[in-house]
Length: 350
Image (tube, rainbow, N blue to C red; front, side, top):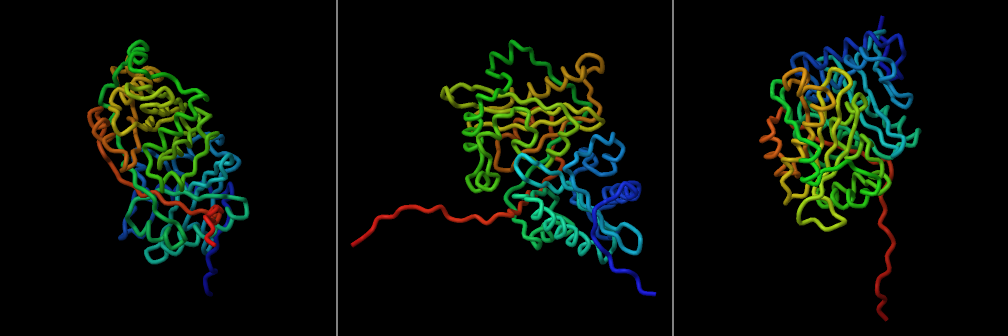
C-alpha cells in the first residue's frame, strides 16, 4: 500500500503533545546527521521553543498566532509557528522545524510557502524571520522569496555575574529617565542615525510606532518574541552634546515573568558611550527581581541582549558589562506589497 502524500494544515489541540516532542527534538539535535532542522536560534539559553511554550499557561498563545504542521502517514514531521503583529500587519516566523534525513528541507519549504499564502490572504504586509546561517536555513528562505538585510550578535550574561545597582539619583545625573510618548520624534531621529538607510527603509517604522514606549516589537530584534513573557520598560538617555530634540540612547528592558533570560535592547549614537545605560538596564532587572538583595546578585536564567552588527562600538560596552557573544543570526524579510517609485516633477526642456 502506497503511503499518503504529506500535507500542511493548521495545528489542532490534539497535536500539542506531538509538537512538543518534535520541537524538543529539533532543538537538541539540529545537525545534518540526525536529519533534524530548526532555525538554529540559541534556544538553550533563550528557550524560544514550542516545547517550552506548551508548558506555559494557555494565555501564552494569542488568538492571532498561527501554528502550522506537516502531516505524513498520520504522524507530524514538521511545524511552523508564526507570531502576528496586528498593529503593523507583520508576521514573524518564530519556529520552523522538520525531521527526515532527506525530506526535512522540502518539508520546511512547504511549510513556509503555505504560511506565506495564508498570510497574504490575511493581509500580512511583511514576513520576518531570524535564523542561524547553518543547515541550509538562509538558502531555503531565499528560495521562498526572503532577502537578508542584517545580522545580529546574541550577547549573554551568565547568572553567576552579580548585577549592578544604580540609584535613581545617579541615573538622573546621567540623563536617564523613562520614555514618554512625547519622545517619539526624538526616538525616530535616534533610530535613523543608528540604522543604515536601506535597513530603515525595509523596517519602515512610523512615528506612531514610537509613541508606545511599552511596544515590545519596536525596535525589532531576533529575540523579541520572548518579550510576551516579560514586563517591558523603555528608558531614554539625554546625553551631553545632543541638541534639545535629540537623544543619546534608548534602552528596552524585559524582566522575565517565567524561567527564561531577561532582555536588554540598546540603541545609542555612535559617538556615545552606552556603558552607563547598560548598567542601568541591569540595575532595573536587579530591582524588579530582587536579585541584588535576596540572592546575592544572582539571577537564575541570566540576561540576553541582541545587537545588530552595524551598531558597534556597543559590543565593547556590553563586553565591559560582562556579556559574551554566544551566537550570530541572520535577519531576513519578505514584503507582500510591491514598492513603487513615488511620482516626482522633473524640469521640462523645450
